Amino acid sequence: MDHILIIGGTGNIGFPLIECLSKNKTITMNVGVRDVTKSQQKFEGIENVTLVPFDFLNPATFPKAFSKVNKVFFIRAPQLSKPKEDMAPFLNYAQQQHLQQIVFVSLLGVEKNPVTPHHQIEKMIRELEIPFTFIRPSFFMQNLNTTHREDIQHNHDLFIPAGHAKTSFIDTRDIGEAAAICLTDSHYLNQALEITGPAALTYAEIAIEMSRILGTTITYSKPSLLRFRHTMIKRGVPKEFVNVMVMLYLITQLGNAKKKHQL
Image (cartoon, rainbow, N blue to C red; front, top):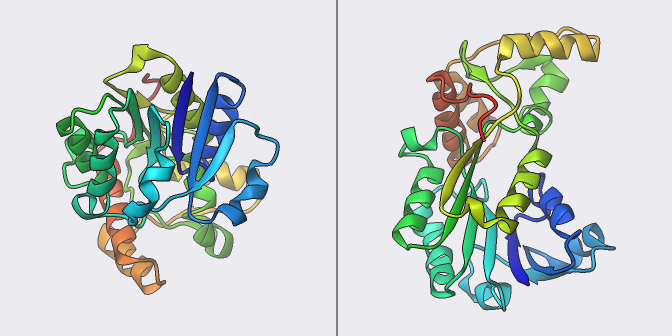
């Protein structure tokens, strides 16, 4: 029987993962959340889940979260951009628990960009010699209706600094399903898995497709990385989060997000 700690369980990847794992009655889960009371309604009806308080920046929450746990799944919180400061205590604690596996949602092409937080986290896990599975997905399809929704909705524009590069979008629900497989099949232990969607498209092509579906013209303004960064910070988006976005779109411009059908 596995007892798995899920961090990021209320999100677009974590919740589909929990739905998949909940079908296996031999698995129980601790789901780490910032506010247990506020999260209870989302998990109503899922019997093998226990909500526990969790905060990467508060080591006092670690013991209860890791109670009886033999495996861990986690996603880096977007606002945490300095792994040596904000992730090291968590990973060091995890190493002390003698886990059978830690599954981390990383990033496609991360091995070629050592300045990204994802690269640094992967390196830390390897150095700590924790049995791992790194899931390296391409850009989330859901980015278009979350991170970039404001520009699409109000300006009818894809304000994204990807140049002419192609991106193989993947649905976050598919990432959650892949993570469930990795947590229940030892074949994927100590592997880095690249997962993508079925097609690689430029943002100009995406704008054309969105225009067709939405019945209104969506443009692709193709801003520079500097203009994008300046605009996002001016809008009040935290600088650390913007800097990570800029790094990810630099990866895209270099052509590292165009892979498809990789698993």
